[in-house]
Length: 293
Image (cartoon, rainbow, N blue to C red; front, side, top):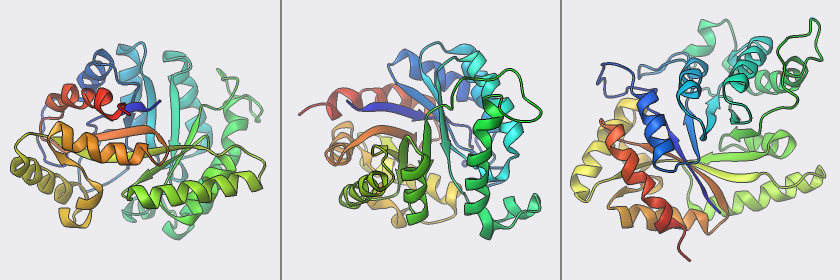
């Protein structure tokens, strides 16, 4: 069964401004049946962005059911002991609901230089933090932190590189892919299974973070997607168009089903809209369509 997640609007690439909308979006996602809500994580990016753990804390306080995911935390930018304190606090607010997505980042090198870190070491920084974090989080460190939680939340490793795939096989409960075709994702899923088997681990679940926009007017949908992608990533929509379903509900559902057919069980949907709250209900309607045989 496919789990449906919503990437909350903690970024404001179109500079809409005004009060934060991610709390309302999370409440709407819970009302309309989403399984999880997720937040991205950057210290600095072309788009204004709220801090991920603070955003999830606000969401935890006003929801009761949906899982809360980092999609993904740039863990290598952070001190593991403080991350453990943040995760333990979030778990106290939303027991058992955390999904811990992690990734290396690197698309904005100035984030690393601002913290005195080398962007070329981002993989090692992440791996070192993943090694240290369980001891801090579970009270096995010196000094021992309190409160603690009894075990790590599910780890979702993001990224498209071979190193990300190997990291998912080694430490992940899931792999969160992005900007890839169904055929390529299927191939990578087979590679992931082999890598995990070599480590005597079950294959991590396959997840996909994907940007979408539902609008029966496909010209308008494409125009809004172009504006969003350019503002968010500083690149033309054409570079990612083949990975970015926009248009009618049926068209978007058809393209998502192609990913489900190759084994994706966790979808994280980012609405490419200046009005993301208006997209939540439409995106929720995808569940029935993508679940059809």
